Length: 297
Image (cartoon, rainbow, N blue to C red):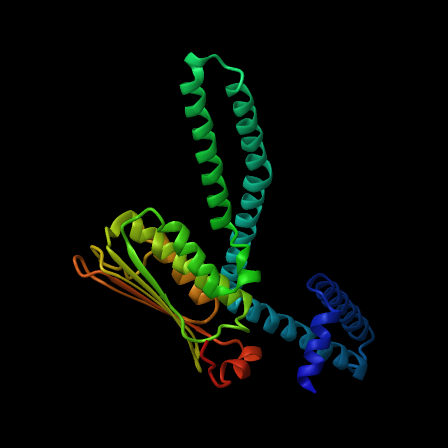
């Protein structure tokens, strides 16, 4: 009953309304106290009840404020990641719809001009057309990275495979994606986090590791979704606080896994490659599905 009363008060009384009620009760209590004092009358029962009501509302308001402050850091982290994803989607849409259309129009115009240019200018027109085609392809790739639209339609495994195939297409890196279980029923926020962490790990590997082999493994465990990323590159020294020590990619991974209440372990040292292990715990609504018997593809 206390929980239902607390929920009802939280829904029906806002902070500003609570302040007004407290101010009115305090004013009434003061006026009644002054009246009783001027009349030399005993304190009426109504005044005691009024003071008790004021004290109860003040205590409830204080408890609510302390609780909101206690959970504020997690709420801020959740909001920050949500804003980040929304901004990525907006940039992806602008790149694909606006800049992509402008580049397509410029490419068509350059091809039209090429058919009408004299022979001595054909080489320059060809270079221009090729440059526009490469730029358009790069813009589409960046748009797909910012907003992996295929996650909703293809699922996590197929989206990761498509991303690895596209990103490592023209590199000498030998890669594999291991997933021997169906990943149906994965919550959207978990799939996005796993995709982003893999995306960041592969980007860091291409920039710094000089690796020759990469292995990504997904496992559906009773306690959650396990993601393991291993490479045989140069390795590095993981920072205890990546955000403060300039390892922004690792800090972003830690923020995403913390948002879902998971764990992230980074095993690496110079010259010995890197291994990243992430475990995303199942949300209560997905726990029953996660505990179901595994089905091999």
